[in-house]
Amino acid sequence: MRLFDRHRPILYTPAAVLIVAACATGSADTAPTGAADSTPQLPPITLLPPPPDKVEEVVDARTVVLSTGTRARVLGLAAPGECYSGAAVKFARDTLLGKQVHYSRASESLISLRLPNNDDYAALAVSKGALRAEKDDPVLTEVEKSAAQAGLGLWGPPCQGHDTTPTHPAPAPPPVTSTPPPAAAKDCAVTYRVAKEWAGGFHVELIVRNNTRTPATRWTVHWKFPSGQRIGETWGMTARQYGADVIAMSPDGNGSISAGGQVSLRFNAAGPTAAPTAFELNGKSCSLG
Image (tube, rainbow, N blue to C red):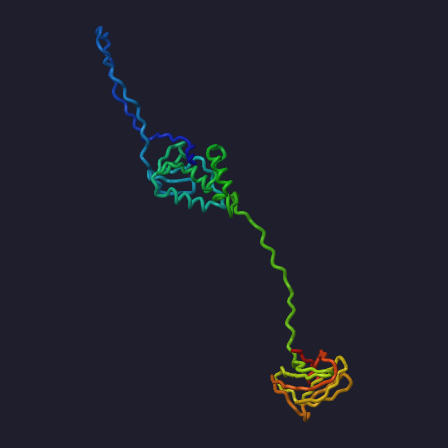
């Protein structure tokens, strides 16, 4: 069954044309005996609908101005709420503006409107969720329930059936995480790599980098062996060992590492291959790289 089969009847009032044939009365005299009844039959009363009228202006979603100058509100529709009033007016303009409609008066200021396809405008607007039905209109109230269950128009987001736009609490700001600042670059960096090993000994490649903007003159590199290792042959350096402590320097003791430059040192050592955990260049701690 079509949605709009149940609608309120339209009463055609202003331009109805009543066609009544003149009625002839019989002679006051008694008809001659045996004469046929010559009283004419009255034609049926014909009630014609008014011609369609054009919607010239949509004042709001339920008030229109017709080309005849009639300004009236559509029967059965409640005033739109703030949340969906804009959408309701757009629906009314798209549906009615410039269209030929039939209307009938319910009162001086209330009318019913039918579209060219004979759909009732009030029922259509409520069925699409463009407007609410007035509470005292049982037909439109049923139509409104169907629209609400389907979540159409004002029954969906953002209004969700409310006349005013729902306010949602602002989302909580993300937690502030404290990121520790990056460690400051040290003035030097050392790479310690065991390149070869054999029973009772090993060979190390040692790279020392100067990260400053000034040369490291008369450089010395200091570290401690962790497991009793003893340094042996050296290349690119001279080494002195005092217990676990080792001090390495350039072969002539006057070597320089340029700003941003590096030196490559090598040595053999006896003992396990456990690596030292700290190095110093000219008394300043170096990072391990």
